[in-house]
Length: 300
Image (cartoon, rainbow, N blue to C red; front, side):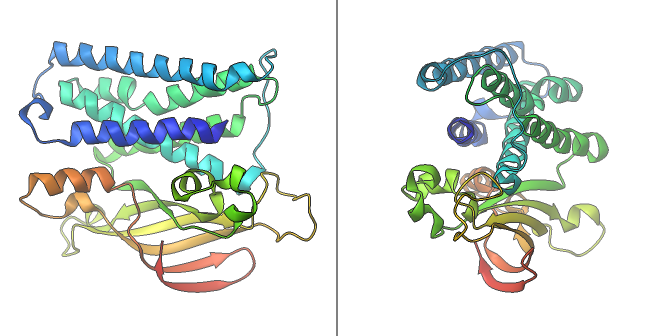
């Protein structure tokens, strides 16, 4: 279930970011409250959220038996990589919610209350639907991850009035998907959403934003990543003893904040804004729970 909901979230992220990233006059921020824009945003978000939840119910939940609301502890599944996905999705849906309200001229306080919480509200509503499904159940770990992603967004706005640390994503194909293609994906796009073995989630910190009087390039970031490999099944203890034991990976790397690259091109500014959630491939140091230290000259 979680992977299907992530497809909707990623599509919403890309389409919405594209829309508000354009430079036409209509998309320029209003300096004062524009009631028509605000109302249009509220109506649009309500329709999109309701439509997505109805679609999930029709395309997924109705095919499974219902039950009384219950929780399911899946915190040991997939080495918590699915929780990292919730964390990132909650962060970016909240950022979109905050940015579109900023476009309408809504006060910063209301942006944080009604916009930045969009990711937590939407994803946790999906958890409630899971809770009424006999086969699934609401995940406390997912809800905590949703809250953490929103907290990172809101906390930085309250502390610094900007996002100095952003959540980023990278992906490389692995051999595991070929062993369970229906679960881990049959092609590159499916695998990028479903194969946790190839996914890495990053916290990318902009160095200059912490030392604005320094001579650091404004676009240079340092990134800390988390990944895992050896996973064919969600459970930590795999059913086949011949399978590789799953292990965690921790990364230290350099990155770019594309939004801080000086360019006079409005088109490039929009493109940089849209793709900035992707971690730029660069030399990377890996530490893993197998006791290994690896240097990747170019890590995706």
